[in-house]
Image (cartoon, rainbow, N blue to C red; front, top):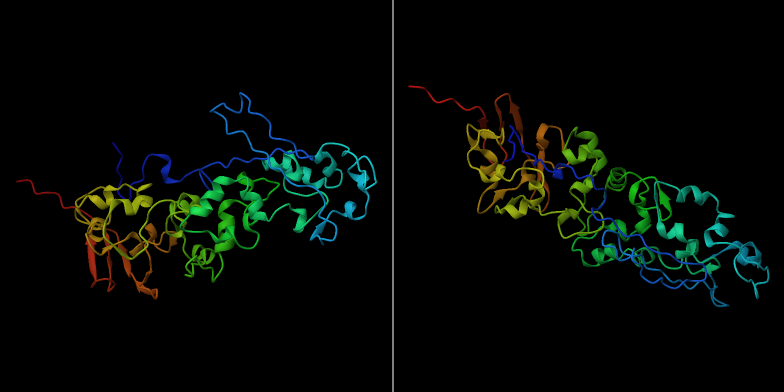
Length: 380
């Protein structure tokens, strides 16, 4: 039996704020490769242990120099100088012989700063195993001696994300523009989990804290930095800096990359499944019970006004009609105004709270007030 309080009810499960950051599925980081391109190792008992993640696959890269006459985009300076002895036994380019140590030992002989990066709290297994998992030590058609374009290189191993990106109805432009995967992740190592370059909330606000950011349909999104600065009453997940409580960063099936269903319109016929995102934290009875003295303070006596507004077979007001889902100036994320119609005209809510209830003035209806106190029945 769930405990009730005097306002929105939060489930006693972990759903109120998820602890997961940027996706609840841990991606299997793969790649174990030698400088000479080792063959895939046979499965062992440890590999087949169902309690452990699948054995990593090995990425095989062609590490030969580009064909003569092809101009590279990037060239490793020792190779360009014709001095193979920095990495190999011999200086002669025609007979360099084997490398003088393991791949990363040789690389760290010059690039020692990456040892500290790889020692971070979150490190990329592919990079720790071998730098040539991603880089050609001679020359390449791409900057930074990469063997393949950034996202193609990442997604060739991170197939879960690749499949999600390919099938998602709603795309996240961060994965396909500018630095792509590296917009959020450091491919070598980081001090934030999942190789994130900053804390997740800071990453989100860094991009979404600007004017003019558009979604996949060209609709301009709110400047979240400005919105949060001007509105001190933050929604629980926002106050906890947990964007992933409601959004998935790599792509999804729902409007605004939401993890679960939530109505995208001002009006909607009431169907419980449309409010799956809200009900993941809030009690569904808030919209199902016509009468209550405990579920909410938004009631007139015992008439549940959430039910009255939302639970309709046609043109029910959705949560967004009155609530700003990120933050507001008033408690309970009550909006000052709500975008209305295809042109986004701002319909003022004009809500005023009182000690025993409140009122809305000349918005969807004429001024109406409510009192959330209940008069005790007279004892005869």
